[in-house]
Length: 171
Image 1 (cartoon, rainbow, N blue to C red):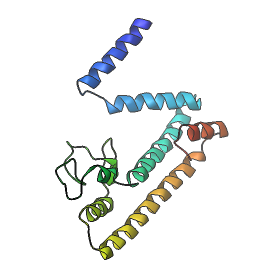
Image 2 (spheres, rainbow, N blue to C red):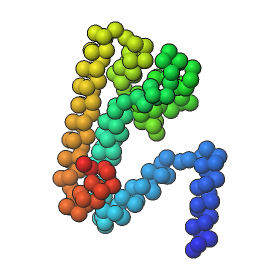
Image 3 (tube, rainbow, N blue to C red):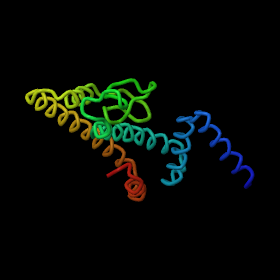
Image 4 (cartoon, rainbow, N blue to C red):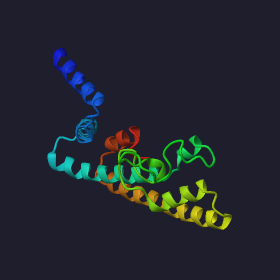
């Protein structure tokens, strides 16, 4: 038993070292662990709950991705060569700071435009306009999360809801 654990751990370590991290495998393991935590025995019940969990997770990821562009803190004013720029090439991956997910996803165009306006020291009127639009986009993303969370709560027991609050999926 210990040898089997060591072998799978070693394989996972080798995959990470070779750049072979498999997000689908990780997602499947997390889903199975979530099912265990929620103590869901029925396959039909799990399909219903998990479909709603996925909607909450996606909405949560979108909302978090709009919370700011931390890269602005790590670049010098006017220095566009000192790291990834908002909307720049990042090896095919997007980052959360400009409206995408750190695990991939489509950047939000409003977040991209806002970050670019800040970086390029846009005029005050443009900054005000972009801030207002970003606040609207963030509010819409939060509303999407709230709706998905409410839909999920409808099919959970109190214990299951408490578990999802404890792991940070629900507020």
